[in-house]
Amino acid sequence: MLTIKQITDDTENVIRGLEKKHFKDARNAIEQIITLNNKRKAAQNQLDHNLAAVNSLSKSIGQFMKEGNKAQAEAAKNNVAEIKEANKTLQEEMDSAQREMTELLYTVPNVPYPEVPEGSDAADNVVVKEGGWRTELPQHPLPHWELAKKYDVIDFDLGVKITGAGFPVYKGKGARLQRALINFFLDEARADGYTEIMPPTVVNQASGYGTGQLPDKEGQMYHCQTDDFYLIPTAEVPVTNIYRDIILDEAQLPIKNCAYTQCFRREAGSYGKDVRGLNRLHEFSKVEIVRIDKPEHSKESHREMLDHVEKLLQQLALPYRILCLCGGDMSFTSSLCYDFEVYSEAQQRWLEVSSVSNFDTYQANRLHCRYRRTDNKKIALCHTLNGSALALPRIFAALLENNQTPEGIVIPPALIPYCGFDLID
Image (cartoon, rainbow, N blue to C red; front, side, top):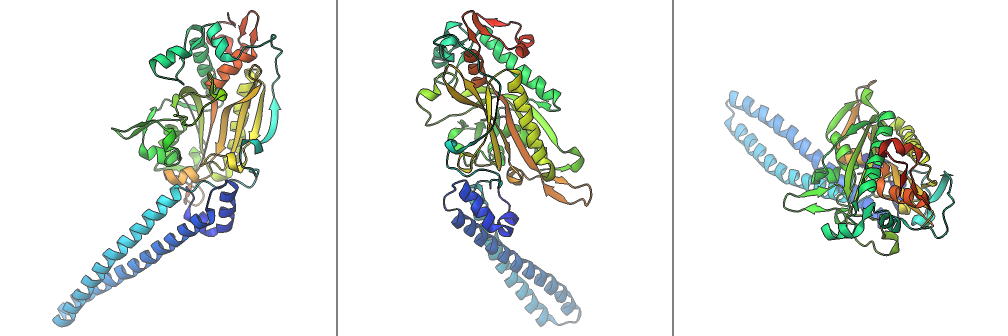
């Protein structure tokens, strides 16, 4: 969440940033936060003053008793009792203001960086780069859901039988290709210096609040009500929460972690032709890269992460483009986000396969993720970053569609050592 210092020191820029994200009533929300903070500070100041008075009076009571001045000692005792009673009210006022302020801060999104383009939705995102090459497909190319059935690599109907729509069953060479992609992505991450983590796929409420999925995306997460646990929507949640309530040494930064997990999203309200097949699932596999960094290096880390994802798509020989998301299409928690999309020749549309985001101090403030500077030993908030490297379903779909030939699906050379075959036929 936003820090109070950020809000009070740079109020107008914070409001303008929230308006760029199309956050409703930005000025009203920020003014409420400032009012509650002033109320909290006033109560705290009076409480500190009263505590000092109590300490002074307590010392005087002993002195009065030594001097035999019982009347003054008794008066001082009564005064102490009155102040302590008033302190209870002040403490309640301070706690109430802090609680209201924190609850309100949880509902306010992160402020975008100045370079984030203006815009209200995906149509206003800015394409910053295109790469790869488009393949010549046979006449009347098939979409991946038909190719999956033709070559018996995914059974969508069986997934419906076992669970429901959005839970596909990978079979035979389809399962092997899925596993090949996972291992390829993890090996590439390890080669780039990421430490592999195997985290839980179920998290508690504190973890959801720490990375900003709660309360913003509560309706999109699968909730285990009896235990009050949540199925993770991305490995970002458990991996970033490793550093909740931690003070790191500056020499440890940047921390680079990667993780393969299953991910679970309710995708409430998603209907129509754009959700067919693997385009939008409730359960899917993903390799995530996560960084914890110091502020002055986080933009460099972001560029390195973008280069990492781009290299993966180049090795898979898929046509891709990189978009800088506009304010209205950014996530609740990000300060700067780039999406990677691959082109589906059969569907004639772009498919998002990765978002790589810098969250500045927003998540770190929620997490109390801090580091100790080497030069002056002061404690400061870290920056957090993450990205998909990569989400598998749409990569799988693009590989099927873009590599279809009359003989079968041709496997990119980079994946052949991982899956053990060069053709799905």
